[in-house]
Image 1: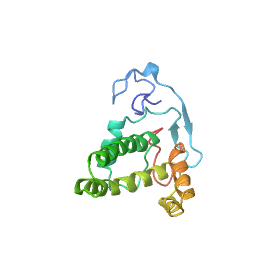
Image 2: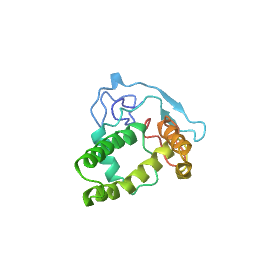
Image 3: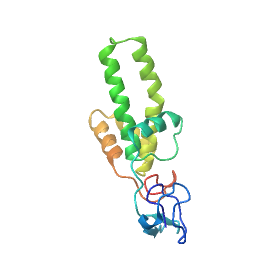
Image 4: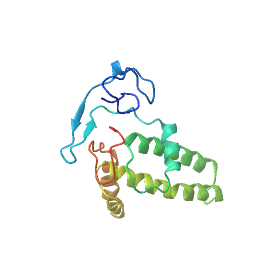
Length: 163
């Protein structure tokens, strides 16, 4: 049994989650066995990542090109980064040092978060090479980034959405 709030594994005798304190009565008992590894996995989703948490993860995992990132983590951070970039673009003139530093500061985190997002959908970093194809390539990568998480563990780890 899993805690519906934090995803912590619970025993059948637990009345409250030992990690977050949520009552067990509200926990859903849905577990399924992954045919690939034979281990039980969650069938209920964990709550979506908030935009603030997404930005924190975006900058704290800036060099993490392994692992997985949920849609809410990726898109929440992208929304905030795009808004900040737009405001800076409106306030500062083209070619300003601050705008250039901001672009440079977000380059590696953008790449690593996109790679983790692709990993979460079961794709490798090589899918970023589609961006070299004008227009259609960006559409292909966008569709891949919008695709739902693969619920089972893959070569990049357990699902952050269900685990």
